[in-house]
Amino acid sequence: MFVKKFEAETLEQGLKKIRQELGPNALILGTQKKKNGLLGKGFIEITVAAEKKPEPAKKEIDEQALARLFPHRKENETVARVEVRQTPVAKKAVGSSARYIDIEDEPSKASLKPSNKNRYELEFVRLGISQQASKDLGNRLICDFPEGLSDPQSVENKKGRLLLSQMRTLNPNTLLDRKAWAVVGTAGSGKTTSLVKLALYLRQQNKPAFLSTLDSRKVVSAVEMSQYSRMLKIPLKKMEETGTPGIQLIDTPSIRLDSEQSNWGLVKKLEANRPSVFLCLEATHRLPEMMRIVDLAQTLFSIEAILLTKMDLVTQTGFIYDLLNLTKLPICAVSQSQSFKDSIQFPDPAGLSQLILRRGASL
Image: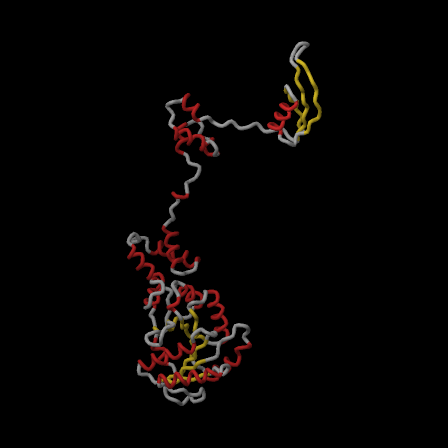
């Protein structure tokens, strides 16, 4: 508790003075009228209590007064000294006035330029590659290629070389050498469309092929495959007719993500025929959703390669780098959502890395 006495000519003046110094919460303990001697002018003494003693107001530096007293000082030097004295570092430099001017509290945001490492990391992120993978690629770009990074075209070439080291693709000749291929994937992933595109590719290579379907969940599936068969003039055979010459392309029902048990019927049918298996993935899915599908598919089937669909609907293809890095599976083909003609391609590793750098451009 802090107690103080105030003197004023009138009670109103005293209360005003009390409020200015101690605030409105000050407690008046008593008042008393007094005189300065026998013939002196009377005044009022007010005894007041407060919770704590008021802190003395800090005196601000009058820059104009300093300028009149020290005309040789520059205005910017005065401001610099006032700001620096607020930091602990500047207090150690009291002996030298020049040091007050040179020391800065902290660099401004405008002066903070990103390092080359951060710049290259950001460039990989803009391609759609994950943050951690982009950080690793940025570090490798500087460590593996310390020279020649001043030329933009040279930097792009070095980026391609880094991406190329991770690219894995399935040679199209592998497709031609197998007796049967099954295409699996979730609903709407483009399994049937991709199967028809593969059949067209085989016909262009003068390789005999025929279609089969295991999708008994939809009544329209068999009708749809029959229409494709008539339109493309490619035979539609049953799975059991393995003696038919040519490469068998098998359409399958959609993979269900709710549980492994819901896919056991498809697993048993494929195990009986033992075809090679492609996994269809929509390029429009986010990487975590792709990985969820890949993990389930690899649990159920022996996946040989990935077939990416709807590639023309994405603008950032950097997810391919993360997908290959996480799954260790090769890319068989990339397919677009356009018409069947020229809408499926079989890239090599160099073409796949260039696809990433061109941010969605076709091969």
